[in-house]
Length: 312
Image 1 (cartoon, helix red, strand yellow):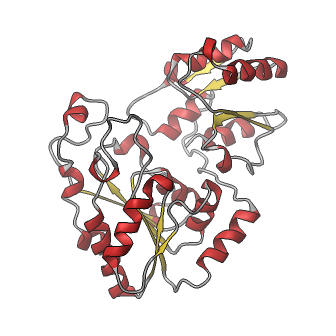
Image 2: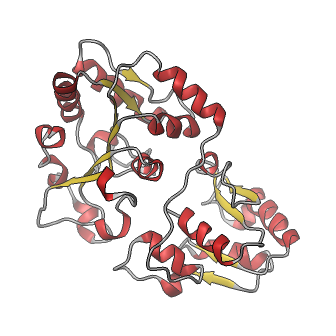
């Protein structure tokens, strides 16, 4: 959701060199972007500056570039301090322009100094090697190829509930029932995507679907390869997750199951004809950013979505 701001800056300053600082996990999705001159990564974002050789190295590298402008899309003050330590005097900070009624993409663009009524689309430029690997992995899968993405990132703390019990979770039985419905109705080839943390859940879903086993790619692909796989699917069914946004950016038809997050701020942004958002209104949703989120014991917003409805 930061890439439209990147494109807006490039449109506004066509001769500028634009560098991008991101997490190590996001780097593969940006390496091929034609608007980026240099790509910097931060591997240990939560380590204090004085104890982080990574942050001190980063500050030295940024200072050497002598930037005229920095656009800060992170809300944490530690990130502004990094830019200030690098000697950047003009910093456009999203915290000064943010409007909670607007989508994150629009807020990102506003932070960069633009106010476009028709924001640029999200962009992912795939590496040819990743596209080739994806085609090889999907080669024997019948069409339509339908991906099921059941995860949305590892727990941030050891005490946090596991994937199948957390706020956005939909449950392995629901995904398995959906997979069987899609296979019965469309003779679909089912693909289970995800990272290594999603593998136990994906394996259980594959077991419950039964029959001709779905292709389980969770834990078997890099981030770039997973994006390339999503780009070659006929449909992705996903929770509110990074891969859902990848599908929207690549134009892959998408059904996204929506529960506790704020739809107006972070819904997948793309062609409305290719995106279907399935949600069940409940009194406590959206709960993100409220005390109710921390006390939730049952995510009834997600439990109330039936596999039959998603299949329809």
